[in-house]
Image 1: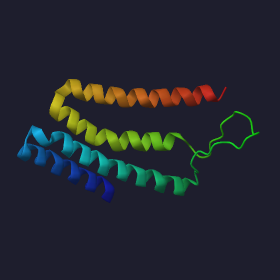
Image 2: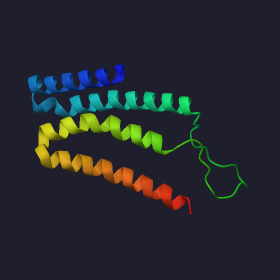
Image 3: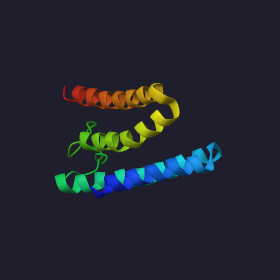
Image 4: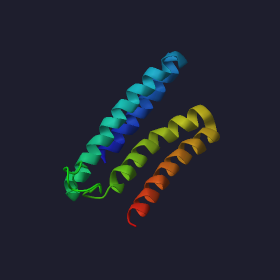
Length: 125
């Protein structure tokens, strides 16, 4: 997958630039990398939605009740986003905060996925 190679190259370049420029530029480098990563994830989500025929959420028209209707599978963007952000977050967290940072980063990703799954499970009732 070309996107994965591009992300890996961007991450390596960001880490190398941080080593060369020092900690003063860390925030700007991370922000720039996250912006590129967000654009990549958004493109993947759009492509997946086109493949699966999913449509974005729309507010119901007045008079249709208070029940929200969603089309497509709302778990796909969460899963893709988790994987997309997990790879660079793993490298950044492990590089800067070691094992504790790695566990904290993945603990947050797991918590978000668990909360999403729980909300979908509750909405079935």
